[in-house]
Length: 155
Image 1: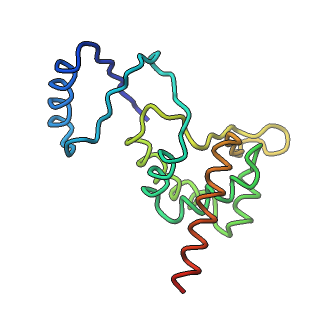
Image 2 (image 1 turned 120 degrees about the vertical axis):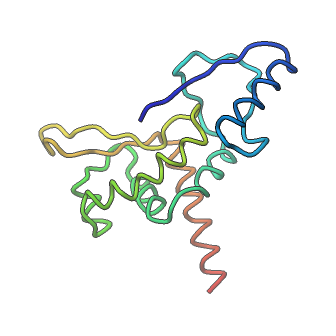
């Protein structure tokens, strides 16, 4: 995925004016950009707060949430073949459902990716293995259990 990172420096009035121009160019509603007080190294990703991750989670399709919740059970490495078996869907469906993650990440370009994959070694040559940072897995398990509790209350 291509990504553009823009660093804006100046006083608050200058930054505000530039922010308005960027919002108009991007066609976004006012207030969706946040001006960071701290300079960031280009390409450096920030950790998620729980509230930020909750906002991100709310933008995901149900299928992507289901997949991330399953990966969160084994964040140290979940082979695709086992994920296919657990979810009962083929890899191409999993990949398609995870596209929702990429779309939601556009709103959080400065945040770390919630899930990563590597191509398997001897155990799964050519197959993906999904990984997740433990703190992200904990947030996902919490949000998934909150969602399940809400669904049960609605029934």
